[in-house]
Length: 117
Length: 110
Image (cartoon, rainbow over all chains, first blue to last red; front, side):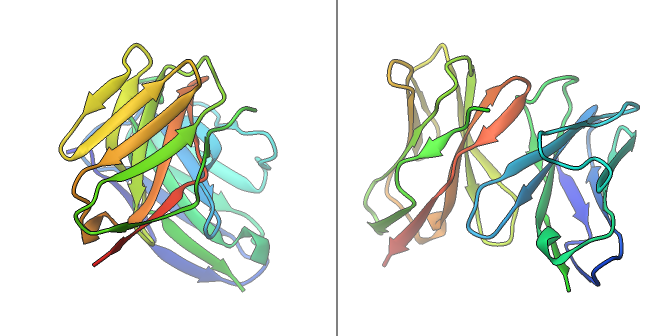
């Protein structure tokens, strides 16, 4: 149980275009989902926390107009990278928590590799 | 904000030996700590966790030790196997979010 999927697993896009990444909890309802970004040989950095039906909470330094997060259902959150640039190339990882307002129990997805050319 | 850090970026260990991975954290208010394993190109995989009211917890081949006095966390892997080669992250839970350390790359020598 507690499986989280991401789609796509990798994507290549041209500079200036937008890319949408999906995060799904397959066998549980996730009130809270988290989005992380990981650059090569670096740690995971939290970008934002999203709760179903409400606006996401972004970490300091993360542009909310560039990284659009939608958590429209209890099993799906999406991250849209708008007007992508090469510096947005990274590994994007989501996690989902079945416990409302809790970050204790997080199940991680397999990640999405984004390359912007 | 405060963050978790790791002492060593790399660790090379002989197959069959025990591994010890260390982590220092800075947020004294954190009440929950987790160790994750991440293989190349994959998401983090939960290994073991410990709450702040404990100082030791054991799992299958793994033990986590917590020293709140010096804000130090360690992961011990017994009889390290080639499949243990990966990057290991400690994470602390505080302010309703996880903060990850820098990671230690473990390489197992045959």
